[in-house]
Length: 189
Image 1 (cartoon, one colour):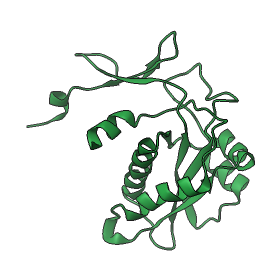
Image 2: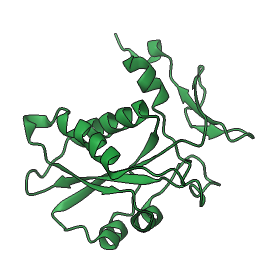
Image 3: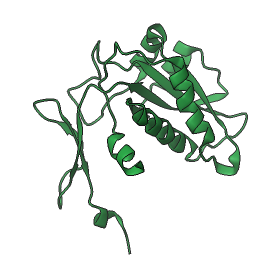
């Protein structure tokens, strides 16, 4: 059921790094994005795939992990993602990418979840450093990086109460808690 996939599709930030992701798996996930909606059917998105540890090591330093967890710099060795999908906007096709990359990212991560994998959409990227590290041509705007792997952490959704904080947090057992506003609080009218 789609609801189950959406609930299970959390922002995982710690992975079993030793569990490899095959290039074909990444291609299958990007194919889901390819088949998803695109504004004006322009299809301006392009993708860089990485499931090679050396290429992954070039990507990792340019990602900023979990802004609310001020004392956590990101996954340590052994817990880093096994793969990445970098979503690019091709400026020779369009100068604006609207919400295409959000739709693509959600399609990819729902597909990953269905395969027993997990991921995290990362928008906090040191773009110039990543561009240089991977020699990404200037015609491509770096939009998002998706970290992908077999999740090594438990993520729990919980309801917020009146006046409660929406910031995610980790408890003493490293369970990641994600507060969500109640449905009635987000429907207007």
